[in-house]
Image (cartoon, rainbow, N blue to C red; front, side, top):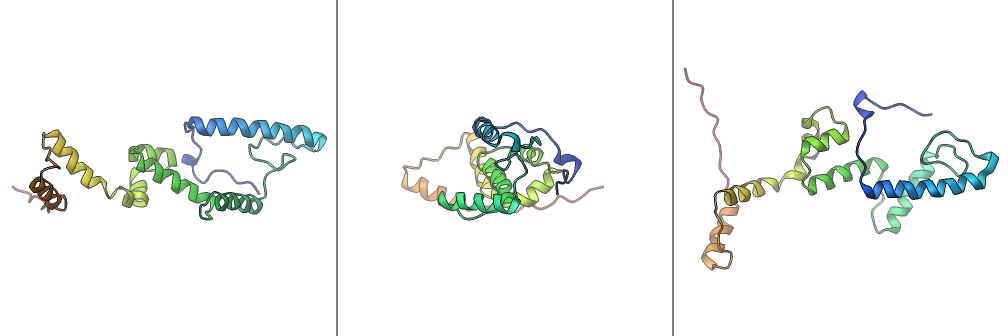
Length: 168
C-alpha cells in the first residue's frame, strides 16, 4: 500500500548532486531496457525504482538486495532510513550549515536537527577557538618546544561563563 508524505514539509524540492543525477540517468537507461524486454507485461506506473515489469518493488526484497550490496562493499547492513542519517552526518562533516541541513531533511526547525545531530558538532568548539585565534593574529609556533607545550596546555582550557545578573 502506498502512502503520502508524513508532513507538509516532507514534500519539498531539493537540489541533487551531479553524482546522483548521473546515477539516475544510468538507472533510467537500464529501466528502458527492462521496459523493452517486458513488452506488453510492462506496467507504466510512473515509478523510478520498479520490478522488471514496472510494478512497485517489494520492500523486503529491496531491503535484502540493498543489504547484500552493503556487505559486498565491506559495509555493515543498514536500513534505508539509515541513509538519511548518513547523509546528514556527511553534510556536517563537510561543514554545511545546520540550517541548510535542517531544510534538506525537512525538519521543522534547526532545533530538531541540532538535537538529533548536535553531538557530531562536538569538535566545532575547538575549531571556534582556533579560528578566533587566527582572527586576532595569534599563531603559536608549533616548532618551538615551549610554544608547543603551551599550545597543548591551552587546547584543553575552557571558560565557564556566568550568566549576567539583571540590574535595576
